Image (cartoon, rainbow, N blue to C red; front, top):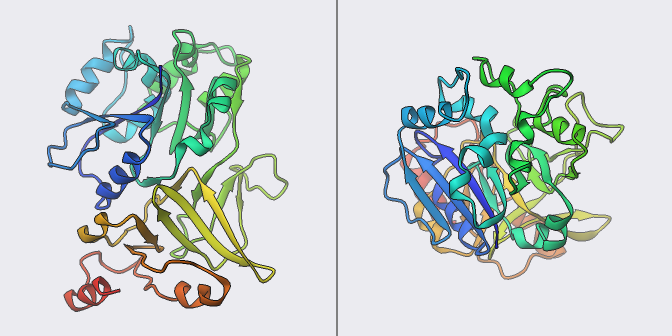
Length: 324
C-alpha cells in the first residue's frame, strides 16, 4: 500500500505562495494529496496531487449524507472541526493508503519520509496532535474512533451541530478534542511536535513548540523559545533552520514549516529554484553555497521585515527585492 494521502477540502482563494506549497509537496513522492476545492485557477499541480472540483454546497450535502442528524456547516472555516472525520467522510478515495491525514496549505513541506518513517507509522494509530498536520492509521475501526463515547457523551455530535468553532481537531483550548478521544480509547498516539512553527503574535521568527508536559509550557501547552537569530531554508526538499549556539553553527531539520497568518511577499520567479530562503514575510532564492560561522550574520541581515506593510508594496521596492 502507499504510505499516506493528505485530504484537504479548501474553498476560496489560496495563499499567494500556494505554488511553493505545491512544489514542496512534489518532492515527497511517496505521499499523496487529495484536494477538494472550488478554486479553478490553473496551478501546476504535481503528479502526487489529485484535485476534485466541488462547490462548498455540494460538499456540505455530501457530509450531511453521512450522518442521521442535522449538521452545522455554514462556512469553510467550520471544516476544521470535521478534519478528524475525513477518513470516514472520504473513505472511497483512500482505500489504497495505509495512512490518511490532513494538513494546512500555509506550510512548506520538508522531507516527510525522514520523519514519518515506516517504523513510526507502524507503531501508532494517530500521529501528531496539532491542526496544521495530523495522520491517522487507515482502517475501518480507526476512521470511526471520532464517534466514540467520551466522558459519557458523543462529543462529535455536539461539535458537528454547533455553529461555533470547537477546535475538535487539535490539542489547544481544552481536553474536548479528538486527541483525547483516541487516548481514552487506548489508541497509540504520537504527540511530539516535529514542525518549525512560529508565533503569530510576532513579526519576526519566534519558535513555539507544543509540549504540554514541559514545565515552561503556557496554558495551551506551547513552549516559547528564547529568540534566536536564525536562517530558514527550503533546501532541495528539506526544511532547515540555522543558528549560532556557543560559537557553533547549528543546523536543525523539521518535517514542515508553518507560516500561519503571515502575509508573505512572493514573486513567481522564486519557484524555479531548489534553495529558497524563508524570511519572516517573504521568500527569495538562496544562492550562497554554504552557511558557516563567518558568513552567518551577514546572511542573516539580508532581509526586510515587511510583515505589517501592505502586501502591494511600492513597485520600486519590489524591483529592488527581486534583485536580492
